[in-house]
Length: 406
Image (cartoon, rainbow, N blue to C red; front, top):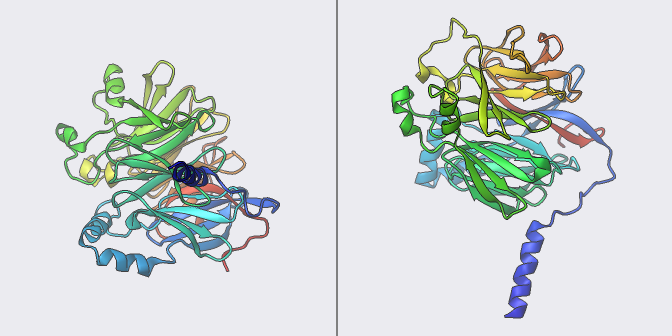
């Protein structure tokens, strides 16, 4: 019995131990990864300066094997086609989120239509490991501050999986509300916040039918206490702030540098909300301009998100907002909440920060480009062509001199 327990303990320890980087002595180069959702590719571009393209990676090298597996399973096929005709807008969702390992040798990718997370060898393009998520769709990810853990939302499994980024072994998991979406680490990795958005693929979008959208909440897991969780019901906080008109489906979210305030977008709303963490209250709500050419018919909004994409300058004084359905992006002064120029963009779907912290980088899913906007002036700097329907944009690292796979 004692030997069996020791063996079991050894297996657990092995799963939780992150191996040393394979190439810790290799100099690394900062780049930016752009996930082309409908292509099944990721463009690698410069993270600053000209933002020129370095390479393009195939993130579905096993596509035929995955499709064969799906078509032989009636339940998997039903969900696969549901994703195509729902959130995929008639297309398969082949790449959602991406992070590199700390040693720059692999890219970890969530692939919604294949309900998995894979690690791709950046030297060969081969798959290092594959983790099928619970349920039938994978979604947004985040990586721990030390780069050693990657957390992924399992949309239909109402679960967040936390994986060893080098081996793909599950370190932990915790239950969430319906349709977990965004994930954010705080306090140096001590806490992991998950935002569940509920059902976004039905036409029951009138406020009267809000109750059909499911259990939407923020779940905060304590990574130092066996991932014990607590819940923030944003419905209660919005109601207390006199904003019962707003959805409580928290979409993209970003903390201030000191993590005292959280800014987030919600379904159907052209603007964002400010939440004070210490007082646990909604403190301000910012409505941004409507595009007169955008229909107010909620059923026309992509996955219920009128605005989807939010980032913050490293200094914490500026926010960058992607106005998805209103076809613009804008830089907002955080102190006054005054917006800058409205930069015309075609279905901007995400916003991140350039490597030098000087610019906001948005993905224009409707134009197949990423566009750089200056935090200082709020004006467009340049656009760079990428693949079909770019969505998530993430900073990563590759070995110095890397120019692509193979």
